[in-house]
Every structure is written in C-alpha cells, then in structure tokens.
Image (cartoon, rainbow, N blue to C red; front, top):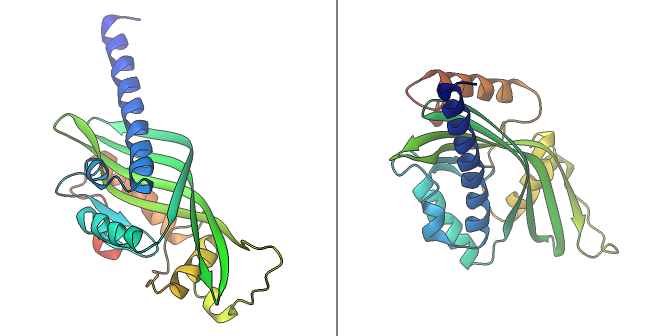
Length: 215
C-alpha cells in the first residue's frame, strides 16, 4: 500500500469515527438536556429535524425539546449498529436505535418502545461533521403498561391512523397532545424508497438534502 492509499484509509477511518461520535453525542446530550452542547451537533444554518411530532429547523427542535423536558416529557434514545457512506464533505449515516417514551393513556401509565434507524444527512462545516438533516426510519414498535396487571383498551380507529412502524408511538403522542405526522418512512414502502433516493442525491452533490417541505 502506497502513501496515498494509507492517507485515504486513515482519513476515511477518522471520518467514520467522527460521524459515529456525532450520532452518539446527539443522543447523549439531548436525553441529558444538555442543550448548549446538543446545539453543536447540528449544522448552524441548515440543520433540520423530522420526527413523528416535529418537523422543522434544528433551532426550533431544541427549543420545543427543552420546553417538553421542563414540563415532564421523557423521550429517550438508545443506539446500536452504525454504518456511514462518505463522499468528500458529505455523508449518509445510518444508526440502529430505539425511541422510548413513558406517558399515561387514559389514566394508565405505559411505555412505548419504537425500533428503527436514524438516517442522517451529514456535512462538513468548518472542518467538523454536522447533522444537516435527520429523518428516523420507524421499523416496529410496541406498547406495554408499566403495571402488567393494568387493563388498557386502545381505540382501533386512532391506532390504525398510523403506519405499522410507529402506530403505538403515534397513539401515545396523540393522546399526550402532540400532532403526529403520518406517512413517515418505515422498513418498506414508498416513503423509505424516496428517502434512500434523496440520500443518494445528497451524496452525489444535490443542493439540498431532500425536499424538506415534504417532511
């Protein structure tokens, strides 16, 4: 292996480690309510967050997350396997994750666990990797009463409003007063195929990381 090949491998490894650290910092700092450091993971002017209950600029996401945390909302994240595709100063990072939320539904305290992937459009800004756009992919979820003996009857009409990947999470968040977006990417389907296409275009140099107005 010549010097140029060694440099290429080294740079790629450094980028992959930096991207993994970026994703981990997102989860740790957000869940710990470390809002100042949480702001640093985002691209300062283009950062965009899409979730079941929020779609908008990263700065607004930080504000509403802070307000929710202060009012007792607890949405926690755990991370698993990670993969990144890198092309120059752009990358697509995918990270296995779970979203955990505890709340009351009709007087019964429950936990919802949603499993999926964070699909992150990342860009290099002032020499550091930042999240330009985050779009979770919702693969499957479940709902369990905290007290196993508690009885809870779900409204099938409300439950069926949401895709399989986040139907229970959407149910809980709707009951908690959030406006939950339907049609977000799941394990299969048109929405996730469109997301993959937007990711490929981002890596190839498109001006924006997908049509943000549709998210």
